[in-house]
Image 1 (cartoon, rainbow, N blue to C red):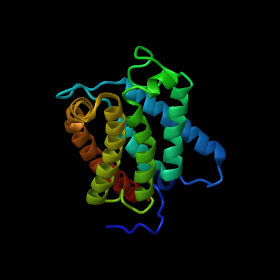
Image 2: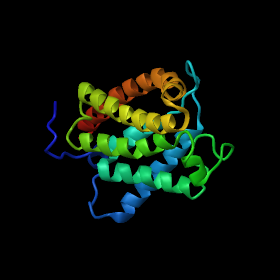
Image 3: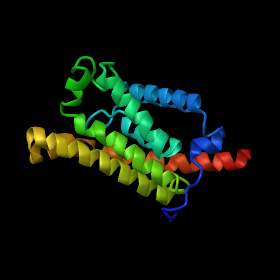
Image 4: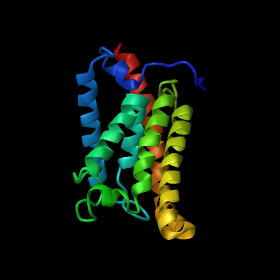
Length: 197
């Protein structure tokens, strides 16, 4: 398992080397990432027991591919867009928009997105996205953070038991699927890049 002290290139910087000072490049990537997050929130995939979106998958992959700073900044940009009333979240505008939506039942999960992107991005900068086991561990940690923030906020609104019943349990099988998918995809991307060089 990789250490936590030595920074390594992220998948994005390995695939698309550029000046670290390129503010325009970072802004374009953050906009593209926020757009991808919006798309992932809107598309529902049939799954049991409830339909799933690929949003948590995209959050964690952005964090790992972009690194902790740009990954977290991308998710924060997405949240700011939503706070200003853009219909970027799942269920918007039908379920409300802006800060009113963010203060609702899914608000904790949204905050968890930013925290998780930063944590998995940090781990990716330490090489945790290079093999199956460490990517799996990073994705489990990121998913757990999203669920913890979401559960605590939802429990504040509807109680601990109902929050687990409605805000965690129905989404566990989809979370396992997305964790496994990310753990397979990211190391494969690194292998592909190594062959291209």
